[in-house]
Image 1 (cartoon, rainbow, N blue to C red):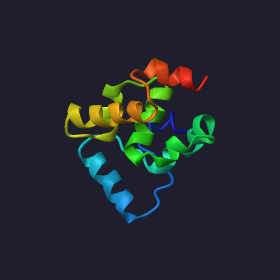
Image 2 (cartoon, rainbow, N blue to C red):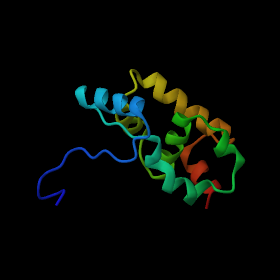
Image 3 (spheres, rainbow, N blue to C red):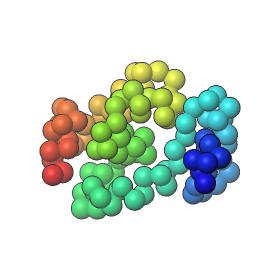
Image 4 (cartoon, rainbow, N blue to C red):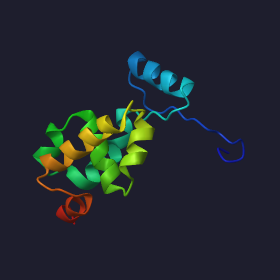
Amino acid sequence: MILKYKVKYILIDLENEEEFSFCKKAYEENKAYRSKNTFDESRRIYCDFTSVYEKLPLNQKCAFHYMMSGKTQKEFLYDFGFNSKGTASTYWQNTLCKFNVDSVIKLRNKFR
């Protein structure tokens, strides 16, 4: 049905009015918005056992999931609507540092 009617946007698990406002703003700016619940399922796949993950701020958790799912830093930048490449890069690099690795490949290997 989603494909038949060419649905572009789906709102799932927005927890409060603030999240809805962020989502609405992203829509108006023609950007994507992911609620924090978007990543709840994948959190179990990679990180139930690690205390490092639990201490990460939300944007670093999102960066982590992008890395683990094979997405690029550029996709992370656009999907989360950061104002600059530097902001996305900072979250990306800080996430790698928290796991004591210097590349996405090493991060993935750590969880194999």
